[in-house]
Length: 194
Image (cartoon, rainbow, N blue to C red; front, side):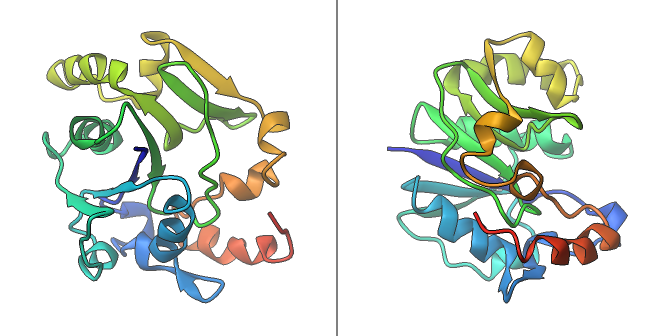
């Protein structure tokens, strides 16, 4: 069994509080695009922080579960903790709910497999193993919520832009929607095929 988690619990303050998972990209809501992609590589899919409107419209099933944060109000680290706690496998592919072009084919044998570009790490498009649960729980207890700092504590394999390019343009694969301007800018990716 393989697990995947879509983190959908953020407040989207830079986007006026809108549910980014429900934004339509190329004719489909982002969450539907992600579910189609992730269902090809995972048989256990969680939407974590399932208070988002887009997630509420989805019907839970054998493959799809709506999961609340175990420790609410802790941002992406809290979402990762819930995914690690609830996953049905030994590793979970974690993505942010605002990434319309995510590709589920990342893999590796480290505790964390994370893309890194000139913009830095991309921890919300990464694979985490059960070995991360204890360090994540300790960070939450100490209110050290910066997810990127976890990589110094656990074995981490970096996915380079050259490796990602086998699946498509890294800028497209890692595109996310934090602001209305970034949402409008997604039009530039329409001509890029995976």
